Structures are given as structure tokens and as C-alpha cells.
Length: 345
Image (cartoon, rainbow, N blue to C red):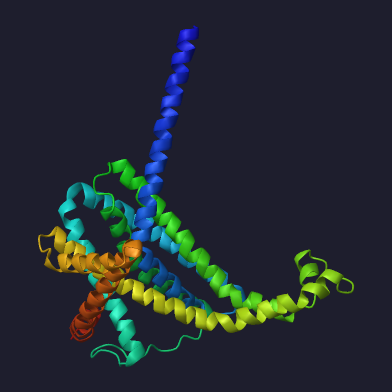
């Protein structure tokens, strides 16, 4: 009896160790995939707040929630099964599809840079401006649908990057890692977006409040306390800082997101070329990074990363700039023509 109990306990301990190791593997794979998708995550967080501009304050969080739910639906119901099927049936297609997504990131980043430097008009064949929508609910539904459609493209790239980081993992490990990455990134992005869109409201409330401590304690009756009077200058200064600081913060976030897009997109293309047997460009970047790192041995790893990321970003920007006229003058007008209802009679 005692021997059997000890054996059972040994089995339980062994299973616990296996489970812990599996959790460690999942966490390691998920964090690696999340780091690879950092550029897309930053850009997503920078773009999404624009979809709540112009709406009443009480509709901002519901709109963010609707977009977040749509994002989860994109990742878990559509992209996760598609990624697993791709891994099982056509693993050879992962790298080309990933490169296609990388090219899209390069195009998006370069297009944003060109828009900032030299604002351009709509491509031929595209409508110049949509007719304004008067009904607030219709406008909200249209904005949410547009955000979810944009999220689908970014989510597809995130899931492709995550899948590419675990090519040798088993089916169920891939499924769990992809689900973990999808849920984690969605919570990170839209939790951050919720904080961003409400930061200015919180700033106004702090700037106007003369009893910050009482407000936190839900005590709004009576004269301000000593703690209120002590902390009031600090809380009001913080509120004014939030109000004035959010516009430049969003602008900075957009710049960082754009830079991250061309860096990630360029890096994906360079790595994909190496996988497909065209390693020349990758070798040039690696050799340049190694040579730069060798000049300062104490900071070699950091310098190599900076040089490699910069080279990937420059390549991504150049590639994206080359793609902009192709997409804007050929592909988008062609898509508009194909979507246009055929005339009858």
C-alpha cells in the first residue's frame, strides 16, 4: 500500500513537472512571438484611438470594447484555425505569406511617411471623400467595422509571425501559443487604447477637482480635507499635464509605430529571402552589424541590434516607397473597379 502510494505521488510529481515545463514552453514561445510582433502592436495601439474621435465621451469605451471583441473574433475564430491548417497542410507557404505581410507593413509605413512629408491625393479611380453620415449609430457602426477590418490585416500578420516562431512545435502547442498570443496582444493593445482615450477626460477631472483625495474616497460632502489641500496642486498639475501631453504622446506613438512597421517588415523580408535561398542581403546586414559591434566590445550586442534594426528599417522604407505607386495607382484602382457593381442594360 505504502509503495503504491509513493509511486502514485511520484507520478503526480512527474506530471506536475511536465505541466510546468509545458507552461514554461508556452510562455517562452508566446513572449518570443509577442516581441517579434512588437511593431504591429505599437502601430495598432497608435491607430485605434482615431476611431473614437468625434464621439461623445460615454461612447468611447463601448466603441473600444466592440473593436476589441471583433479583434478577438478575428484572431480566434478565423485566423487561428487558418494558421493551424496552413501549418498542417502547406507549411511551405508560411514564409511566402509572411513575406507578403512584411511587404504590406513596409507599404503602410512608407505610405505614412510620404503622407507626413508630402500629403498626396487619392489614387485615380478611388472616391475622394465619403458622404458624411448623420446618424450617430450608423457612423459608430461604420467606424467599428472599419477598425475591425483594419485589425484583421494586422492580426493576420501577428498570427503569421507567431506561427513562424514555432515551426517545430506540435499541433496543440501551436494552437495554445497562437491563442495565448492572440488573447494577450488583444488585451495589451485595447487595454492600452482604453487608457489612452480616457486619459484626457481623467486629466480634465483632475485639473478641475479641488478635493482629489475626497473624490477617490467618494466623499463629496463637506469642505476639502487637509489631504485635499495638500495634494491639490500636484493633482491639478498632473491633470493639466495629461490634457496637454496626450496629443504629442499620440503623435510620438504614431511615429514609433511607423518606424517599427518598416523595421519589422524589412526584417521579415530579409529573413524570408534567406530562408528561400537568397542570403546575400541578410549577410550584408549581419556583417555590417557584427563589424559595428566589434568596434565597442562592451556594447557589442546592443550595437549589433541597433545597426541590424536600422538596416532592416531603411530597407523596409525603400521597399515600401517602391510599392506605394504600385498599390495606389494600380492595385487600389483595380480593386475599386472590381468592387463596382456591374451595370445592366
